[in-house]
Image (cartoon, rainbow, N blue to C red):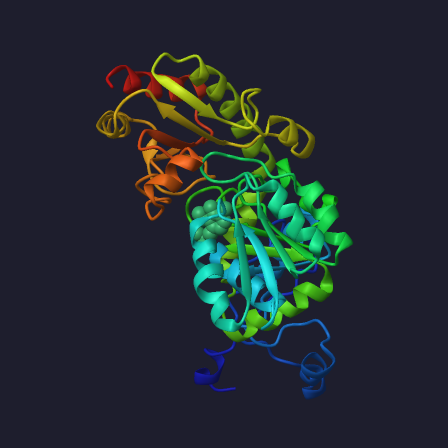
Length: 389
Ligand code: PLP
């Protein structure tokens, strides 16, 4: 063989003795076959195997299997972002003439997609507030919708939807139930056990946990996942192997991180509730939270997100934000670093004043994603910033 051929060929060594503990990163965009027939089997009989990077990748596959296992589902798929997972799932599971129901408290860009994009494909979208329980149950009982989309807990006031109750009703009418489980993680909540069909995550948040990659994951039964795979193959929005590796690595400490975040958030919420400069605290673990009983029945932990309303003006809240020294001012959540944001000016800035008021999203509301730092340091940072307000 000539050198200019040799440089092109990779040497992939077999592991005769000793197997890597970590899933290796496979950056291969193309896969070769011993016989042409082997490729045809993948193409025609849908045999599992790898053929082309847009169809699948072994490192990415390891992540998909892992999340499917954690969420107690058969199969999984991963995407280049949480929005990639959400848009591809809804596009795959709905057809022209179908209708779906969603709550307006879901993640903002999810709502933009279902309200602005799905109707263009002939899909009818019913949007209700989580407060409109009777109307929601009535629509489900009528059985006129094909898909129910839930997200719990919600952002930023951490309302908890009774997933089990709504799923049981929906399944009786043959309605497909899709749940965004990003805020809870499979450590705190496993919607499949309540009968949900498809579970979605923004892997950018807790699954990765280190603010260093974007990703999305969808898990469910083989049939649904195969429909979603067809969309991903055409849209070409799957996760890359390097990002899959980072999420796989993050998942090794998911339980440890989430348990610590649950504990710290619970303690911070209790402490904030007694703080003289705080008007109101939103945390599902508090007895004062409107959905505390549902959260207790549905979740193994109440999560690492806390929101609190400061007893001050909008300027005072801005001063509080800028006075934080340890907690970072940043718009994401779910990682090892504690992050704070003011939803009225960031994630929920496009809502009308009335709508924000109705949802409790005031200009003085702070959303905190609790990290894994020492709790006393977090309290000291918040206390000092509050003292100066
Ligand atoms: N779902 C929830 C609950 C989110 O908070 C987000 C992003 O903040 C998404 C989905 C979208 O995820 P990504 O930003 O990875 O596209």
